[in-house]
Length: 173
Image 1 (cartoon, one colour):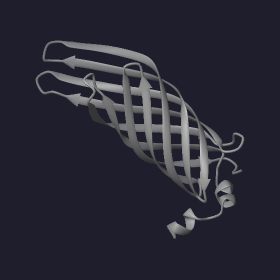
Image 2: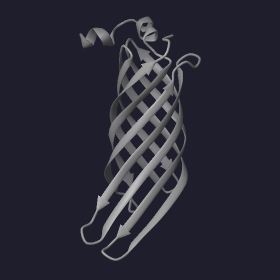
Image 3: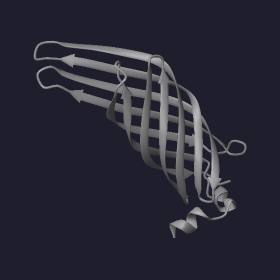
Image 4: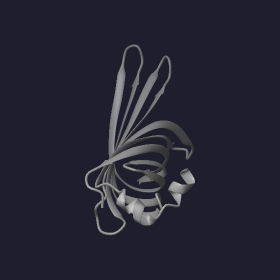
């Protein structure tokens, strides 16, 4: 049955595309450290997109949160927040699709270090640019997707691999 969904006509896929889409993803952020190594962190992404732009274009907004907690005597907690605005191009293949998006973003990182007596913290904000390649399947108004997201900010290049789902509402095309 899934094979039949993947080879369905492009017209069917277009008729199932809703106007607005919201969803979430669970992923793994591979954060680049100062020495060049990568540290894996759990990441949660929320997405909102508008699919009624001309042709295969869509506009997307995403918020991503990742964190790291380390230490026993001296504890550290680091939060990463990213907000991206991403125009996207989608290539439909029946009810399946590939999408490519790129655009600017804002990245906030907050780190705190504490022991039994003191606590220190720092907040860093910076502009970033990101790109994403995703593969998904449309099942009515629900969309299942997996993607790879690369974010560049001065001095770091981070990678996120995620899987998630979204739900659409509004009038289909």
